[in-house]
Length: 71
Image (tube, rainbow, N blue to C red):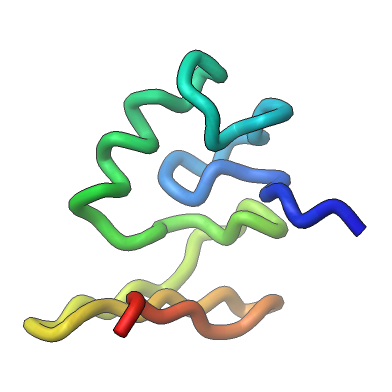
């Protein structure tokens, strides 16, 4: 099974092959994600409910569940 995301978790647009690599069309998204939580589900592209707290963040997709900031 391919573990690469189908959608960009910052803009929600389809991810190019190798989306995490520089020069793949989502360079600005990757830079913004250094400071922001994911806003779109990387599996289905749906807008997620995002909660930001002083200690981290959580994003919830109605289809694929919860994602949390690294501890």
